Amino acid sequence: MLNLRKITGGAMIAALLLSPAAFAPAHAENVTLDQSLLWHAVKGDLPRRAMKAVSEGKLDKARALYVKAFKKPYAEKQRGQLYANLCALDVLSGSYDRAQSLCSKALEINSKDWTALNNRAVALYHAGQVDAAIKDIETALNVNDGDQVLQNNLKKISAVSANTVVKN
Image (spheres, rainbow, N blue to C red):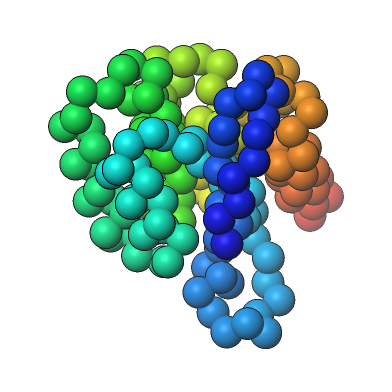
């Protein structure tokens, strides 16, 4: 399900509620942190078609469309948003190292891109780097403390961190 919503400052961002369970039968009840990936609504035909492909579960097609979009003359800000979206796509695909790298590129362009910080945190979480994931979410919350997705991610990741400490 693709849900576009307005965020602070009137910008649009897409929150894609997809997880591996989203591709499973409807009775699947396992909800993962992947439900908390964030997506920029980048203007243009290629990014729009890429988001449609993601919402249909066609991740390879979406990746090809995003890569093709980088050949277009997007402004620097939009290029950063494309990197953040590719990062989220790679998280969905299980390519966590590549996802981290792409979100880092987005953050080189805009260090306050809380979408990229969130998506990198999800990639870090899946790669077992819980402390780094918490740091990214906390940094994102310093930029946008009212976002429910960020708050939920911090709770989920912190709970994993707390359970890890208790088990050791």
